[in-house]
Amino acid sequence: MAFLNMEQQTWAFTFGILGNIISLMVFLSPLPTFYRVFRKKSTEGFQSTPYVVTLFSCMLWIFYALLKSGSELLVTINGVGCVIETVYIAMYLAYAPRPARALTAKMLLGLNVGVFGLVALVTMLLPKHGGSNLLRVHVLGWICVSVALSVFAAPLSIMRQVIRTKSVEFMPFSLSFFLVVSAVIWFAYGALKKDVFVAFPNVLGFVFGLVQMGLYMAYRKAKPAVVMVEEVKLPEHATKEVVAAAAPPHEGSRASCGAEVHPIDIVLPAEEPPVDAVEAAAAVQEEPQVAVVIDVVEPVTCAAAAAAAAGDGLVAQELAVIKPDMAIAVEV
Image 1 (cartoon, rainbow, N blue to C red):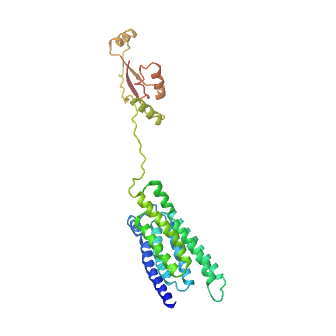
Image 2: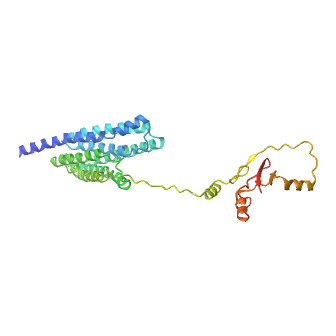
Image 3: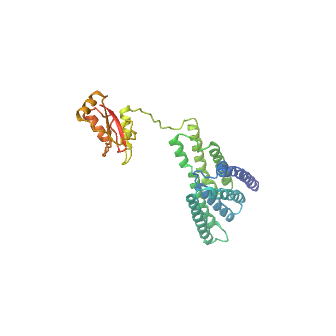
């Protein structure tokens, strides 16, 4: 029995070392993201919640390992995890915009200081049974399990996004693979150490990791859904109506409703001889039929032009908004 127990402890130590290595790789997986944050001096919309929650989980597991004897390998990897997550959060606070920075600070104070302090206080107030921390270990162990389950369930939002967009851009295969390997190793470590609080949450982590890998294999070659917008060319007269309705001329502006309007300078002679009415009528008949409208006080709007077009259609294309300093030549 002693030999079997020693062999079991040896295998548990081996799996613990492997778990430390794999978990270190998982902790370092966001390095490319934070390198981009450092290079661009911007968080680019990334959220700090996963890193704050991971830091909280590492702190709880360190506290659990310190209460339970023979869990030194849990202390090492979670201690390294605390350092790495603290660096991530510090970089996020340095480059995040002010609202995101304030939210992250509130989460740190509320979760990693307030909640962790309350858990530590309640745990240490629990009585010992025969000098043993068994009750404290059980209470803290179930708290660690609940937090670990929430951490493992966090990728559910990413999986929902993959299904909706049919794109695996935000769910790299390497991260899902290492999560599965880490869950298997730590489950073996917990089973060999007869620690249900270590083994149980990794079952859920293994299942979620397999689901992520399955989604990756299903959508890795699928093209993301793209909304196609067909450009419809309107007729010329419809286009003019749409433009006129979208941007009506405001008071004091010059609008032509499709006709070209040019401001002109009218220079009148100092002394103009009177013209007989009969001669003027004859001149109008002999000259080209052009009417010049000058100094119109009330402007003609585009709506009036449309009404005139519906009425007789003679001068609909040439009506314009005319100001006192403008004139328009209209063929009649």
